[in-house]
Image (cartoon, rainbow, N blue to C red; front, side):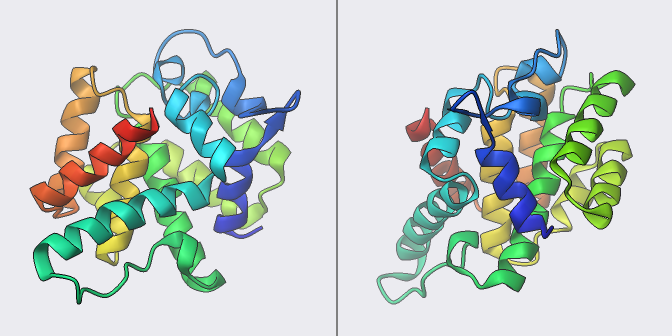
Length: 210
């Protein structure tokens, strides 16, 4: 399974006819997973439930496209080229974007510092159940085991559009009222080299989805 296929499945999985089933609707108790992190990405977070309803990964692309496109017009005028977001790309490029977005989601899930070994094991078990494929599973396991490093996360952003998608996805997952997660978002934005005006537009898109 490609990264795009896996991430689409993860964002639009069903349980009992409702978006956000299985892993994403599980009761992990307290801590990072129950605080708006990866395990509850679609289960209890209103904005991410809306992503499932409107098409999962494509919705992230649409939101980033609007925010980045508006930012471009503000900076360069009407002649600015259309952003190349994940919803508008052929498979190879979309897969690259999807891998970067998934990297951002996993990192944001760890941002409050409380993901323990049990929670990681549950997540890895669900990844295996989805049958993501050996390469994707190994990559995900490595990402879960890494210490949180915003600079390393940001290194996956090979274009301004990918940087925008990664930051938008991170804001969707993180609890901005949590000091550690807010600090992580601030540093991630700095490492992604997001202009303040673009960052504001991305956060406005997230607010509009809530």
